[in-house]
Image (cartoon, rainbow, N blue to C red; front, side, top):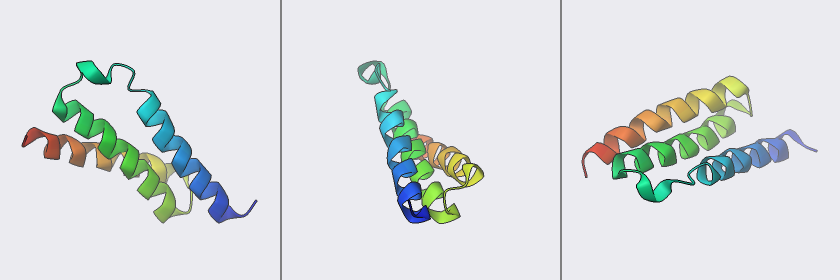
Length: 75
């Protein structure tokens, strides 16, 4: 497999796991939902930008989670 294919597959897996991990989605506040969504999107973006490195994926998820939390606070 090519590296780009692995990066995309990893990004989709991170997003799918973050959504699947929200089995209690209905009991979450809007702010919590925004943080989880931000973490998923950030993880995918971090993986794509860093070429699939673990540090880039985790860093992107952390930054995305913080941004999602702050955006969710405003609603």
